[in-house]
Structure formats: structure tokens, C-alpha cells
Length: 151
Length: 250
Image (cartoon, rainbow over all chains, first blue to last red):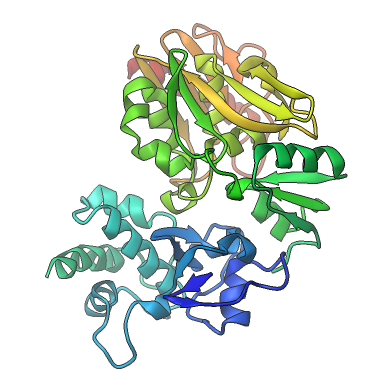
């Protein structure tokens, strides 16, 4: 499978979840693991461009596919991805645990719908849980991300 | 977290999948995995073998046919949600699929998977039942169709044999008035109770071991919903009445 454009060998154990494979085998610990049954959204990554739960997929199933994680959004030392920049500007995070999942969901949302309405934003982030900031600043961050993405 | 040990199989054709299901003991079919994988993560399900359909080609495009829509086994719920064909031919399906979990789940979850999983609180089985659709299943013995009213036999149970795989679902075309309404604690959660109305045909979900057809004039007749932390049986009966009213007002 390719992760952030780099090819990696197939996972050895077929019962390895994609989330655990990314973190333990590939060292990509930016993808967080919360509930491990698809409720919290922390482990959201892009599979062939669409956001999915990496805890609800076996790593072997990603063979031959493109996976994008939070690590692939910006270069080290380079400018932040517009969605990351927007979360930074709008205080869309506090402890940061849920943030990679939110950011990847929003990247997927804006790719599919570059001009989401307030309702579509709520719909787009409804599958991600945050226990710190509440959602008002995250909503603002999504609006800001839509603006920044057009520049 | 790790599912209990299992052997993974990724057949390249439907025939190969049927051979595997026929020859293996305790095998489960894996499509979208949005219900099966969490059950395996919690070890509530511990199948000895997984037969993954995802490498099989030609199972992922919605087709018009026989006055309705064929939705093969690998069509994701998100594809149904975005499909203009579905919105045109079968708007109740289009409306119902938006109530299934969240978009990120729908990107992976499949329509046939929802039907085969047969969660009593899920929307799509009730849509298939309200519209009078059917599913086509295949095994080494051949193909057969199962009408919606003979498909769901109990909580998480269908009339598919262990060696059969659901290859596609057929939803009839529908252009009349309809409504899909449900009540859940949070957006995207499983419904406490829900109603699918197509004309005067009413199917309920979340209030019996399977989706059930109901009399629009007396929708709670004969119902004995179970109670849990989320809702008492009385509350579920109340919801059925209110949701039915809303479904007919819509």
C-alpha cells in the first residue's frame, strides 16, 4: 500500500487493523486511536481520497490503495495545509487528541464540497467527537478552511 | 485492539467466494466491514474465516433494471447517497441512506452489508421491506432471490444459508409520496424507532426483532418492543405513533 505517497510492504498479520498498522508498524502515530469501534472519529484517514475509519478496516484490505494520514498534509518546516492553518487560527483544538481525525474528515469534506453550508459543515463533522473545545470553534475553523482552500 | 485470530481470504471472483463459503467452516463475508469489524474488535464476533469481497470486480456499480435499481454487494452507501440515478428512480432509498451513521462510515459501508447484517434498528432493511424489493443470493448450488418479507428472520438474522452470499439487492422504482423519519439520541446513532412510508405502505424499524410492516391506522398493533437504557417499550410505542403521524404529514 502507499501511505502519503510512499510504498510500504504488506502487513504480516491479517488481523492487524489499519489504524494499528499505521501507528505500530509504520510509526505514523499522528493517526490517533480512541474508541476503536468507529464512533469517535480520531482514526480518520483518507483511502483513495475519501475519509474512512482506519480502526474499521484491516490493514491487508488497504493493499493496492492510497492512504493519506495527517503526516502527509504538510512538509516538515513548510507551510501548514489550509485545514491545519484554519484550525490553528480559529482555536479549533485544545488537547489535540481528536484533531488529526477532524482535520482528515474536513479535508475529505472540502474535497467533495468546497463550499459547504452551515448545515453541511455540521453534517460533515458529525462523525467526530471532541471533548475539549466544543464544536463552535471547530465549525468556524471549517468555514475558514474553505476560505483558505480557495486562495 | 485486535480481533481474535482468523484466516483471511480475498477471492477474485464471485464463484471463488462461493467455493470458499461452501468449503470453510465458520466463515463470514466481509464487504464494508462497518458493522462486522467493530464486532470483531470487541470479540463479540470471532469467525474462523473472513471472505473479503472487496477484490471482486463488477460488484460496485448501481444499475437500472426490471423497473427498479440493482445495487450490487460492493456499492458503498456514500455512492447511493451521491447517485442521481437513485435520487430519480428510488428517492426513498436516497433519503434513507443519509440517515445511516455518518458520511465517513458511509464511504465504506455497503447497502447489501446493511441488509445482510439485519440490525433491527437500521434503516435500509425497512426501506427494502416498505418498497417490496428483494435480494439475489448466490452459492455453489446456484442463485436465488429472496423477497424482503422473507429475508429478515430475527435480530441480526436473515434467511441466507451460511454458504450463500448476497450479490445484489433490488429496490423497485418509486415515484409516489414517501417519508423516512426516525428518532435517535444523537445524529447518526441507531434509531430508537423509525418509520418508512411509501404511499400507504408503512414499515417500522427499531421496535421488533426485524423490520415489520404495519397498519397505518393502527401502527402499534401487536408490537412488543424491547426496552433498554435508551428507551422503554412504552416510549418506543409512543415514538411509533408520533413518527407515523409525521410520516403522513410529510
